[in-house]
Picture (cartoon, rainbow, N blue to C red):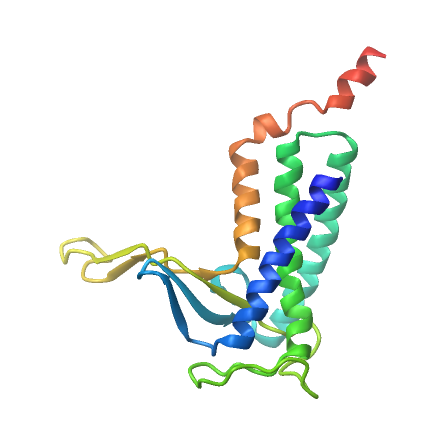
Length: 209
């Protein structure tokens, strides 16, 4: 339980600390080159899902926020059962990463619209903290994204079908620490599922008894 709680705390702390710093120090659309042209802090607000995906306007956003809250509840219950049944530490850590990432993004959606002013795109206006009125209602705030890794890009040769002449960039999506935690947790579970879902430690004890 302590490892799970520590994992959730660390991810949430790092995620929210970076988001709040970006929100209060950068205008939306601004870029800070951390390491050359391949690691950039690029502030963008995402009204929808992870990696800049969107879903159905204001109603869709409310549905998405409610779904996220429900998902957090389900993940927390499943993670608690895994801990009680003494599944592998790796599975517990990965589940905790997914839970922390989900909580991190729902905090943005639920509260940021209430505690920050708007960050209009490409206007050099930096948000203010705890205004008399925020930029959106409860569960209608935007998720703050900033991690941008355009590692390389090239133009497809003209002779390549469909994409010929188009520019290709890797990695194009802009995301945050919460997105990273969710993706890393899910991918790790898929890769190591045989090891993670091996018979829990207490199961063999019960059989022997």
